[in-house]
Image 1: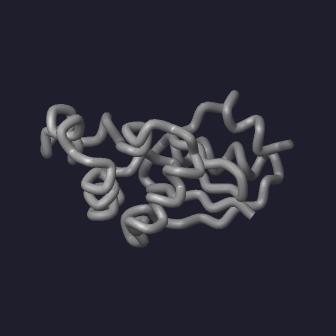
Image 2: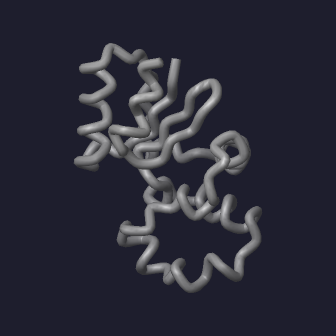
Length: 117
């Protein structure tokens, strides 16, 4: 079973959940703000994903912009970035999909095709 961390008001998240249902893919849904990912979860998912840590940040979000993270992140260690992500679900790119052998950030249908396999 895959875990989908999402924000109910997010249109991309709604599209992603619809896609999962249409493709009969079982998933567990988790509200990313009410149940913000922990530093331990984020660290595990980051290492599993093989993605740059920046991909886990919601770079188009208001909070990201308000905090001036575009300029601050390069000077922060990975641990500091992971700890920052764990402070607020609105900082995390969504939807965040965690499977047994993969992690996906955002919703790009072509990338998600692998979920059917």
